[in-house]
Length: 133
Image 1 (cartoon, rainbow, N blue to C red):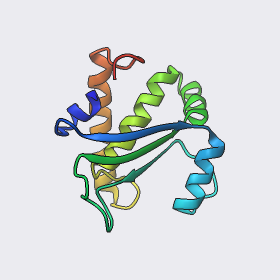
Image 2: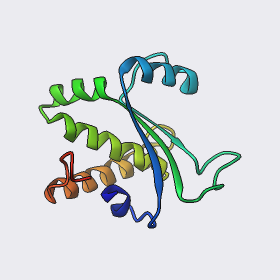
Image 3: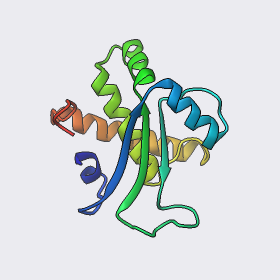
Image 4: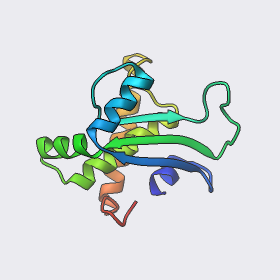
């Protein structure tokens, strides 16, 4: 909820968060994004496409691979929950319209700056623990 508040989402904004393993996220990645490999996070917006905006309070779905998050946390020397929180933030930024893959370097940099700024703020406020978000 704190991430949504920090992004200026109105009261009552909803999203679905699923934490799965590499096998499941690989299937999702293959079926929906035509990439036959596991990844760390995938977002599906409910505000885009033919039915976008039907429920303005529902942002969409964020799917995170716990297996990949654990590997990345270990490789990066960070706590698992901290990495999981970062991936959740990254996924929510995608739902809010930020992009780093299709929009060019300027938009990618804008997204990276926003996620780093928010992540630092959440960390500084002590909110990157299982009870803080």
